[in-house]
Image (tube, rainbow, N blue to C red):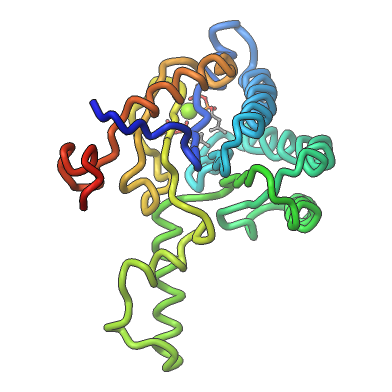
Length: 246
Ligand code: IPE
Ligand code: IPE
Ligand code: MG
């Protein structure tokens, strides 16, 4: 194990999974799981702010989640709208900067308006950066970047041979912040489910069986302990990392 601990992650990305199973375990409708999950989200955002985490990216609704029963999709949209209305001013007071990533054009206009307002209101905050992935898909993000670069080539603004990893990175979502150091998925599944495919290339992956509504500050501390014990080598040898060479 490295003597150089990675300490605190700058950027955490979470797949908040398990709301439905949490509700089913209690014989309640899935809606109550989402409601409970929302309360966890609020607690974890606050905890990350207190821990001086720079950025937190949360997967709230994937581009595949439209396939769920219409009633559940509607319910998630209502919850989302209510959460925005009730939480944004408090988040703003707490110096949180809110960002949404994903294709928001698919949402109802009133929801889009609340998202725009939340971003505008918190634009100048410099505390925790909270990115919320809605109608987001990692493949969409990559394809979108490729399309933007293709337009630039078409318009004579870019030479194809100038497209490299840095250029590409500038066109995917969240290009203004460092890539996630720590990924957390609750709910027991060990998959990425089309989350930040580009960004997770070197992220430390933490999976827990705990269902999202049961996730807590103690569970977050467990994930942070896991992270602190990792040696991040980025392709180098462990000796190089310890010796600080390379
Ligand atoms: C995650 O919980 C919330 C969203 C995808 C919006 P799920 O609703 O996927 O919960 P499970 O996986 O069915 O338990
Ligand atoms: C991933 O969870 C998306 C979100 C948490 C928003 P899912 O529950 O949709 O993932 P799969 O379908 O089990 O892979
Ligand atoms: Mg799920």
